[in-house]
Amino acid sequence: MSIDRRPFLGVAGCSLLAFAGESSVDALARAGRAEAAPPAATGKRMWTSMMLSAIALVLLIVPSTRRNEKALAWTCGMVFLSLWIDKGLGLIVGGFVPSPVGAVTGYVPTIPEMSIALGIWAIGFLMITVFYKITLSVREGLAT
Image 1 (cartoon, helix red, strand yellow):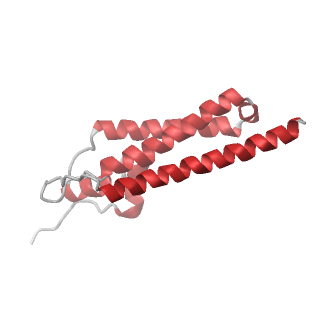
Image 2 (image 1 turned 90 degrees about the vertical axis):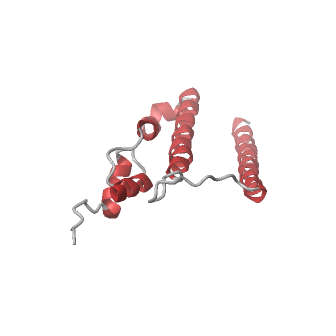
Image 3 (image 1 turned 60 degrees about the vertical axis):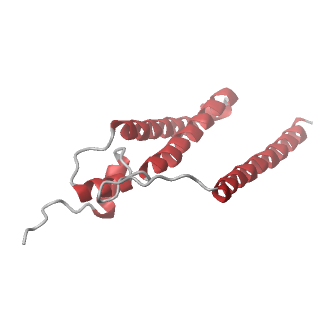
């Protein structure tokens, strides 16, 4: 009987690896297969996401950049891009981790799944439209 000497990562270890640019799924998969390192592209994307969010956080904390509408627009764009990279690309790539036998299962979204995703985007755009309408009416009220 052989003893498995690979370190057990657990939740805390995976969280630390995820903070370092590797998703928890990748960390668990790598630990289970005793692989070396994740693909470089995933790490670069996650580091980019972290840097964008850190810069945006600093810019949002400073009151002078919050009052500057041009800087605020760029900062909000950085937050959006950071979240899109982290939650979009980071989670999608994590879904393509090979199984223990090394096979990657192909996946094509069905029509109901695509229509649900389209409906979610449509509701999001509707909410943005309503919020813009409210914001513009408040600004017009303050200007008069």
